[in-house]
Length: 386
Ligand code: TV7
Ligand code: CA
Ligand code: ZN
Image (tube, rainbow, N blue to C red):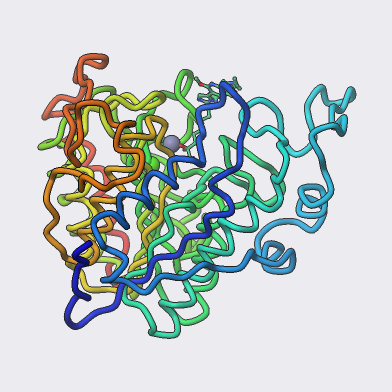
């Protein structure tokens, strides 16, 4: 096992608690915490752990969770069990929007406090200057609201981590490449100019979850609110391809950094934007997904790297392992090491860059459409001057 040397001049930390990887949302549920085991196995098989500081973070305390979430919602998560009847006949819903997307399973509170604890630990390593890049693949659960679960997310670890960064940083840029709109983070920082949120996602108001994130949703409409023009959205159609996605990402992120001048960046790397994802509808390959991480790294700002969605576990694990290698600046061989555990799980594609199934979604993003999206974003950034 020939490990990888620590990068020169900067420190990368990796925050993972294996306790949460055994959790089950339910048989048919697309969210598989086990994808994190697969990710960590590939990372370790390459010897990448030798190049990073590895932490097994403690769970977040209920007090820490309440820094964003309402007390009654956290108390509910803490005491609820799968056998409780949380159906409310008056509102015809389950409590706090739990149900099919956000089931109540055994160990739910432990799961939530572990992934939130890992993001908080990662953020603190950045604020106390022990890390330059901190990675938590179990985090990135961007849909959770103050007092409500949503879209497989219960606790918004991203909001909690950004609140931690804001104790030391005047401006944080949040970038979200999950195929879904990062609505929970956008909503939490809607009326402040200390966080700029930028989400790339499939957008179709009626047909694709969560239905928000139009190009003209940019913050409070009242220009007197500090949050005006600080929520940016990049709505996309089915089937966007590598070259288009990379160019779009760079053409938008570059001016966002130039105009907003963040002092820290949080990057949510949801892997459901990969081609062949069970829930996603883009045609992005692992190299192109990783190119976004590499591009953000080049700004040399304190960087928090988080996971998110990703529903074809074998591809999720490869993408996040590859992105870990980009963070440490290591060139790794594309072939998975022969001693990688679960190697048989990858069939005959024992490489970091498998041929993804790009046949399911025709590309509906024209050059003209993408140019109009970039222009729409640039128009918002012009308000930031001065
Ligand atoms: C960050 N899509 C989360 C993305 C959250 C997407 C949804 C499902 C789904 C849920 C299941 C399931 C599913 C095959 C897919 C309007 C509904 C339709 C529940 C069945 N199979 C992230 C959330 C999205 C649950 N929800 O951004 C149990 O797909 O579209 C919806 C809402 C109502 C609820 N029903 C789905 O990636 C982590 N859910 C199988 C079993
Ligand atoms: Ca997104
Ligand atoms: Zn998603």
